[in-house]
Image (cartoon, rainbow, N blue to C red):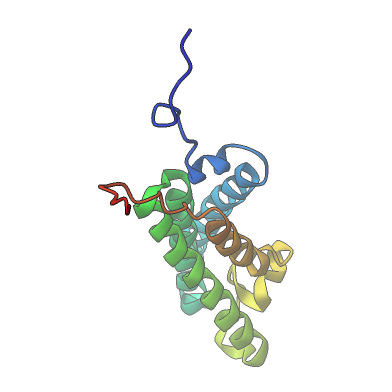
Length: 155
């Protein structure tokens, strides 16, 4: 069997790193949070929305952010990476802002959200997860392929 030339070899894309090890766990955790935050918000909004509308709407928003991050990471490629990057950034800003506000002004948060008290109800995973997600996206950024085209040789 003839050997393949470098142009014929299949290069494993950086997004393929999600298929094993830490990447697989990251995708799983985002999927679990997408499901749990969305389900929590759905139950809260449908059963006792009037008690804490801001908190329940923020939980729904968190669920949407987790869904977007999960889809972006799973999809991969430039578009998926952009979706995941934006989602993880929003998630980080959200958990820091809501975490701070829920600690300083408990009156606005009579019931907890996913991001209340920096995610203490979820073992602080919501606080740590966006840092890991952003690190993962940065760490597995595709490298620029070498520019191809005519080369000029100097004598």
